[in-house]
Image (cartoon, rainbow, N blue to C red; front, top):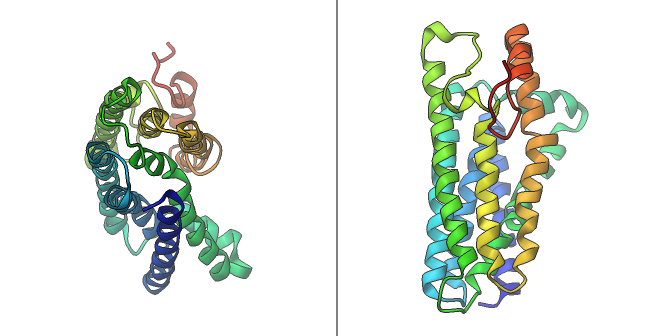
Length: 261
């Protein structure tokens, strides 16, 4: 299938899928499920691209494996978190209910459609890579796979360390500053960004691969300026107060680094 055809079919399918998801979220009265679907959607997108692409089958299978493993791990992690707290909604969506009170439903419908489009845009790296007909792996692709392995392990460890910390009743209301969280206030976000850098490196070996920079660039902007660190820190300051302010003073916000004395 040609690149424009792949893009058209993927966009149409995801937009329809997120319409159905919006209807389900409205019925459940919990719009936080969009985070789960957004994560899982990348696995579906990469699998479709790999199946219908025209590139070297080995490369197509490699891309599908990388994306599906990451997507299913992240989606399942979010699924467990959302289900555990249901019917209580994530604080971000509770805030959107207040911000969009007058036109909440049409605004949220549009938000869901934007999520669908974002999957397609961020999936540029996958689209370009599955169309690469070269029958050997480029050094950039090998480097991308190596970085992906490190980033995936780092993100999984960060999530597991935070979950273990929260499970201990003695840590109620305390700031997690153990393991990777000693060196970064958001190590999970940092390694998530590195995963997108890895996809970009893999795409760089394909024609027009440089355009895939939109992936890591967009994710970095969202994490640093929009829905990532700003909202997470605002919530932490509300719930943990001075303890979190002290944590902010001594711990790197994003890139893991030695804590200040």
